[in-house]
Length: 90
Image (cartoon, rainbow, N blue to C red):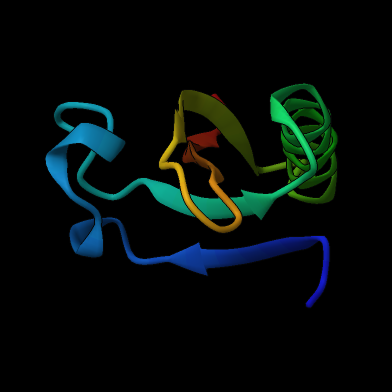
């Protein structure tokens, strides 16, 4: 198994405890893995920075809006959801 599983997910598939209220139209990513909470959160921060950098354009860019972390216990327990929205250049 890979140390981290990272994938984009449609926000409407997530439960209420995982999403920002009123987050219709958000871009959501799931990050799962890491030996402990600190390593997990380091990976989340790294991914957040990469996604913001990769999606910074002259006319549109992403804005980070929300993050939820949970230790769901059991096998591979560290899970985070990060959300972004598209910001239009004014």
